[in-house]
Image (cartoon, rainbow over all chains, first blue to last red; front, side, top):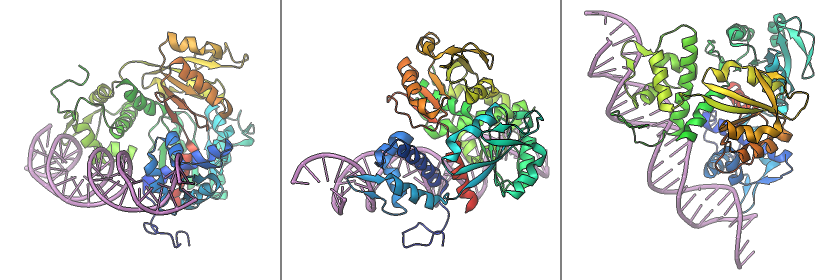
Length: 216
Length: 216
DNA sequence: TAGATTGTTAATCGATTAACAATC
DNA sequence: TAGATTGTTAATCGATTAACAATC
């Protein structure tokens, strides 16, 4: 049922990596534009915010259907719905956050995840001082309860917000518990089993890249 | 002098966006591998950590010279030097951090920037409670001093770590002071002059994208 | 109607990959 | 020497872009 429809789909296959990445960025722009009170948007406006070419945006969307109105643009609510359908991200997703330090607290209290239906289902820390305290409306659990919690709550996403020295241990623990997607906010390189995806967030790397284009 | 050499360079032009982005990721892997005590690395090892194809890596590097040894791999120190030369990121770069809340504190005390020669030259906040306190070994300055500080210290990079509601005001202030590269850690969409680059960090967007590939 | 913006085509460019000789 | 890994070629695939008819 998932992709069966009368639309012309490339195939019943998964999307290309690039398309999926771009669609999630459109989602972000649409979510924010909606919050700003807009109800429709043109491919050019999305292009301005994402630096993705407007033709590319129209082409990406038209692969899945005719969502826009010529001369008018796209209705934000309906496009949000369509993209969520395509990405199959309509439900709630539970994630486990490891590390209740400053970064962990910042992540837990940010609206950025909740806005996209992502729910921080548990926060862990090894520090007895932190265990039991509230962080972003969640009580911090003892790190030793991680395995059980991940299994019970069927968590497949883990966020690592601990110092680099401990990141590999946490990654091992998460992978061992059944987590399949890890967001690594430390600078450490992580070795994980082949069926686990690691996304390392690296502001410094992005910055070097941005600087290059500024300096030339 | 900058790109003049006897190497076969595509041209004296700047690099393609893709190449520059990949080179900065190699830099990250090399930096970390060095910290872990390694002194050489193969294109396959870099590929494992970055999910960039090994052939692509060799090809990227061989555009600029023959940095590797067949049968052995690349010397980490010398490759680090070569890539830094190519990206022209050998010096120190000063950045201004706006927002001394939990996220700002986490950024200021993270070694991630310092490791790549990026120096947080000033931290600003509007909260009188926070002004004067130390954050990551820097005293927090009054937000009203931002313009003067940016000009004095020749800062071209600003990091926004304030709530979404204030992000646009901060972006205006940064752009007005002469900052050309903005890292936005809020979920807000920012409107800036055309000569200013905005990089919005969005873990939720990346997560949706990662989830898609997990679910299919 | 006039203006705007989509959906789509066609042409180009860069990324990706496999394969393998060169050589450490 | 034998094994490993680079540097490079060639072939393929997907991304990018300009252009414009369709149509709201």
